[in-house]
Image (cartoon, rainbow, N blue to C red; front, side, top):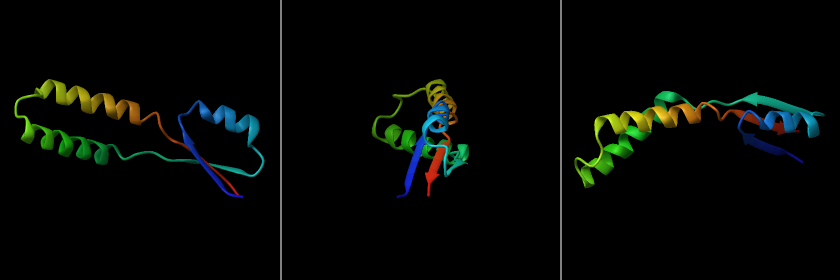
Length: 80
């Protein structure tokens, strides 16, 4: 059986408790530039539909918050 799991860093403790034999823990991280580009395109599309709805400060806050939260997601485990 093969099983692949992803989750936030605190999940690592649970994996260590229950799935340590034969588990291969790998680090997976999203590229911040890709996330920033995706968010920018989506917000630009929304701005085209409803101009002026989002201020530059709000756009920056959205990008900053999403990038901070995305950096917490990185654990992967593959059981072979």
